[in-house]
Each structure stands twice: as structure tokens, then as C-alpha cells.
Length: 321
Image (cartoon, rainbow, N blue to C red; front, side, top):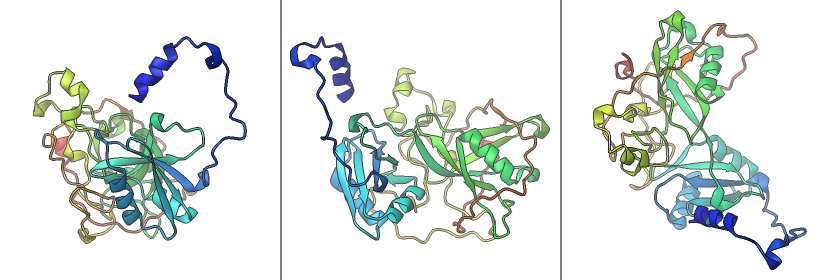
């Protein structure tokens, strides 16, 4: 509706007072502190009650100091923290989910228009399984992260090594684009396909691979008269079924308390979507990741995370020729 009105306003022939610009000097609302505020947009196909969102995230985030939530637009919310430490902890804890839909967060600025907020980035921890041993390096982790999105950090063990069951890296991805499913290595490694598993992945479409809707709500899927399950390019196999420590020899499951039935937070393992088709085999990616000069450098200094919980490895037969 807001977009329709914007288009209508753009076509109007202005006259009289409408031709004059209204001065905003001295009237701009001062946010409590933009450095303490985040704007969140819930990527859901239906409007979610503000009271539900506010109640859940206040309980889930459990800030040490006050948190004020305000609705700005349908599924758009302003979160203002009293403590910069609370805000930083929430930002670093992303992604956050409500009812399996992503709450995309961004910094609050005084020129944001609530009806036009379209977050484009969100950080995710991803797992790369089936890597050749020679590619377990910080340099390759950074290159792979920048291939998928924007590299943020890589998990290391207590000695600073990344060698383990799989490579675990944090990447900021473009949430307006389809999920990247595989990395194709270059000829040195026979163009081997490396599967990507996303931790805490919200609901997404098995047809177009985008977040924010599922298959039955996909306009592209409807316009193409619907794909058979075998033709779908995306599936539940993109989810990491839990969070695992790539350096641990023991499998440990989550023991955290379950959230309410209609909510999912980022401390819970992901399960396959019930609204979409079961896992399908995608066509392999045609992108080639060059891996030359990817040996680790002495200057690498990337953060080490606390050991997470366990996950069974990806079966690469789902994504290879």
C-alpha cells in the first residue's frame, strides 16, 4: 500500500502551497541515541503482532539494562537499548528468528523511512564440509567467505588452527539474493563441489532460494505453474541440523530449554520446513572459486569462538554429479 501511494504521489502535478518546501530546521526528532538503537524488520509474509514480537525478544535477549521497543510499520520495529554492551551482544548474536522468520537488524538513523526499510545484509555461521585437507587454512576461509558474501571471522581451536571436521566461518550474506548452495573449486581440485550448510537458517523458498517466504507463497513458483519436487533447486539440506564444534570428537546435542511452540530463537537447532517439499538435489553451481596462494599467513589473526554443540556431517552425494 505504501509503495502504491509513493507511486501516486510521484505522478501528482503540484500547485499552490504544495510547490513550496517545508523547512525542517529545528524540528528533527532526536533519537534517544542512534548509537544505542537498532531497527529490525521481520521478513514474514504476514503481519506479526507487535506485542508478540516485543514480548519474545525482551525475554529472549534478556538485556542487563532497559530495552524499549516501538512499532514503526508492519513488521518493522525500533529497539532502543540503555546499554551499548547489550546492543553489541544482540548484534553479534544474529541471526534472530521469530516463528522461523528472520528478524533482520540494522543501525537506526534519523533519515530512515520505516515503510521503505529493506535490510540487505545479515551474518550467518556456515559450515563447509568435504574440504581437501590442504584447504583448511585461514586464507582459504577468508577467500571462501568473500566468495559467499563478506567474510567476518573463522572459528579456530585453542592453538589457532582451523583444521577439523569441517571449516566453520562467519559470513555476512545478501538476504535479498538466493542462498549460495555450493562452492566449486578450480581445476587443481578437479572442480570439486563443496556443500554449504547454514546454521540457524530461517524459512526460505525451495524454488527461488530467497528468505522471507516459503514455496507456497512464491510468486515466481506460481507463475511457472509449479515445479515438481525433483525439479526444486533448494531444500532442507542447506540447514545445519545443529551447531557443532568442528574440533571435538564427541557429539553433543543442545540441552537448552525449548521456546514457545510458535517461536524459534537462535539458540535452537534448525529442522526441515514442513511447508515445503522434502530435500531435493540442486543442479551444481557453475561458479569457480580460485584457490591459488591460499596458504595460511603468519599475520592471520581471526577470532576464536567458544566451542559450539554437535552436528552430523553433510552427505555430499546430495550436491555432486
